[in-house]
Length: 486
Image (spheres, rainbow, N blue to C red):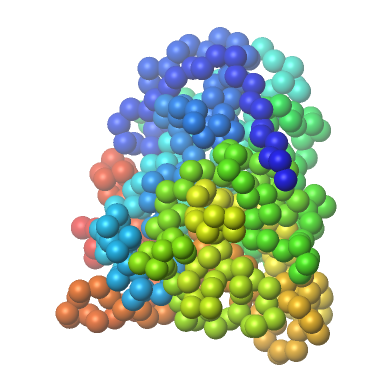
């Protein structure tokens, strides 16, 4: 399928940057004066263009966090879908990112959390500035809506990712520090809000945008897309559903929004299933894929450290035994994701045998189906949950005869693990809410031949980074991390 790239309107590039490393201090310094609506729109357009054109120079002070160096690899190393022993022996891994692997083996890496914190909070400061400046210029309601909603959806998505990484899942007290006021330069409340307060901000912004009567502009908007907003809300309510901020209607809301997002999606059948059916060498984002609301293609870099090079025996990387055992022989994904030696082939270009582009996909039909099934199962409606699970599984298994087991919720969670293995942070975010630990081999640690992540371990939550945050603001550290960050 030919990929239709999003066209971004950009009349002027206004370069901005943020001083020091106090990322809640959101007022940009050295920023060109913004006097008109067109200039505000162009400033946000400069950020959006980074998604559409990978070769475009970054708008200074902003980034696309999910393509930041090592973040995907770091989150991947933290998960349980890799064969640790073969990663240790792999010449390709240790010739490039040995230190990242070793620092992450016991789930105590304190460097990468700072990279993540910086990337997300810097962008939130930028979105705050867009919203603030928009209120100061002359614009019609429709003009203001397409910029404000774009910035608010992005800000809400960024806050949600930070909650998944840095907020202890069951502890409402430990939400995030949040500053949404771009005018507060020297004084602002840097204390942690509760999870309830942060989710209220996220859900309010997303709800405002999904209910906005102004239609998004296909020539400008990327994330102000009603289907994408419904999909993010589905993710938010599912993740919130058993958190310290849980509410009685979370799973009902998750299912409702996932169903709305599904109106624009199609679940691939067993006959036409491919992990990435719009796979090609044209780089940038696509919103034309029938199976996902957004797919982003980048030059392969971090991905090679996750799945290796399936065509080279010395660079093969392997699935963990626990993941591979979940795939039955009639599962059409088994031979798409692995060869008969458990080598990971999910991202392999069938024509060349190599991993030649990095593929990020967000808000897929499969995810929405499984959110609906899990939401029904967790809210006690197992018959409806089973119906959605079976509708999903008939698209993934040949000669399918329906779900025959008696552990519905676990089967749904197993399907999430099967379907989304090696896809950015999907597995780690599931592990952070499930809080189920495991044991793996260590690396050259004579005192500890294995490392164990216990159930409900504090390491399921990343530490608030010292260099990037704690040395500037008196924020309470996540429980457990005091012993490794003092």
